[in-house]
Image (cartoon, rainbow, N blue to C red):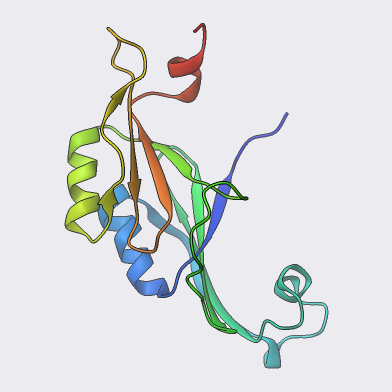
Length: 156
């Protein structure tokens, strides 16, 4: 068995990202923020093992949703965060979250610097199975569902 526990996202400003995910999507801080400085770490540090010796400084935090799925945010300070051109057909594409009120959440996304990327789609006509693509202020695509993936796509 496997289950998704969290998704890691790079952001240019950790405090701004924490604030956005708390205000807009009701995440809370589970652990951190943590500071990493390679000058204060041994060569066997977990962060260096993952990111390689080029990593000198970063900050990260674990955020958690009420459903138990987390987001780990990383602010890479040295080398710095670089907003690269979005490529929709390579690697990471989006994360998907279930929300209680789709329209209210879209409004919060937009009010706090994000955007709505698609119209609201009813996946199964006659059922309350809706989705919409949004984007956080840092360029990450966040798909919002009104129900679970298994409820929306099961028995289709």
